[in-house]
Length: 197
Image 1 (tube, rainbow, N blue to C red):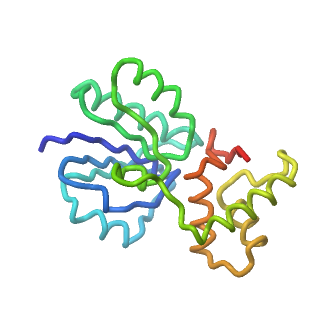
Image 2: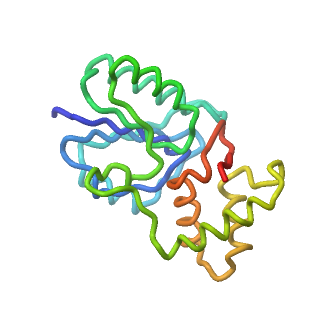
C-alpha cells in the first residue's frame, strides 16, 4: 500500500483520536511506553477498521523522553525510504520542534499537531464556542498564580480547573485542557506543562 502521509503518535502524551481524517493514504504509527500496559477498548475498536494503515508499537525504556527517541527513529526510517511524503508528529511536547525545524530546512514536509482537528484542511482549528468563557476564566485564574506554583502535569491541571469550574464534568474538564493546547495557552516540554498566558 502506498501511503502519502505518516502520522507518528506519542501515545504517552496524547490519547485523543478521531477517525474522521484517516483514509487509505494515511499510515498511523502509534507508539506507547513501557508503562502503558492497557489500551482502551474503544480505541482498539475505532482503529480496527483502518487495518494495515495502523501500527501499534510498545517500546522499552522508562523516563520522560524515552518515547521521543523511538519516534525520532521511526521518523528517520520512513523519511529515508520516502522523503517526498508528509510527516506529522501528534504530540503536545515541543521537544520535537527543533528536529521538525531541521527536517523542514531539508525540504521534508513535516509538522507537529496537538489535535486531530488540525488534519482537516477544509476547516480552521476551532474550539467550541461554549468553551470560550471557560478558557478565559481559566486563563485569568492562572495568570494570578505565580509561575512556579502553576500545575505542572495534566492531572494536576485538570484538578486545578475542576476546583475552578465546579459544575463541569470530568469529560468537560478534559476538553478544556485539550482546548488550552489547541489555542496554545499551554504546551508540554520535557514532560511538564508550560504556560503561554
